[in-house]
Length: 220
Image 1 (cartoon, rainbow, N blue to C red):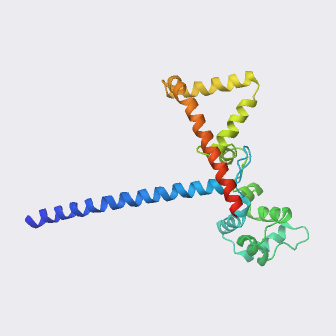
Image 2: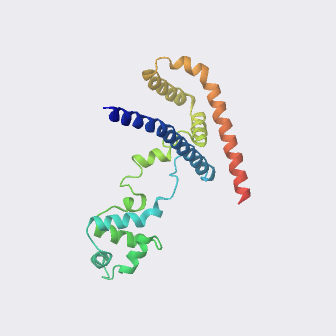
Image 3: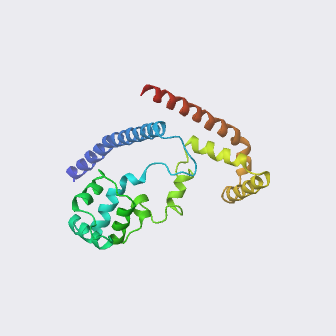
């Protein structure tokens, strides 16, 4: 009995020692991720609202490989099948398919068509990784919804809002207020207190970001 109590006390003691260590690791990981995100924002291209950030075509080779493997085809088998999609019967060689998958070479429109015909995938999926790149998830990235903490996105949205016709601006404002009041009954009071400080804080963040980015560009 005494041994069991001793073991339980020892286990609790060990756990209490491990807990701060675990919390410290979590805190360090969070700090690292925050710095990584800040650095990514610093070296990112300036925000262009409505334009997809990044270059999804760089991952075309990976998507091609996944689509081929999903059809249980080797590179040689895929190359052989492309002859059927080529009116001249030449198709693609296994070496060319391999280079596409490695990302060393990229297919042109004709080659993309042949690959899509054989693999039964869309060119949109091959290039964007999405069959409907202008109608769902990717569009939210284009318009800044996926980057809520990006001061450049806020700046672009604010600019768009100021360029609206006054009638349209009122309509958009009424829509936003209706949504916000629906889930936050005290929103009007909060807006009176927080609107100006929030705007100034974002403006300061944007000014700092642009200054840091200019400094980083000069340091290259």
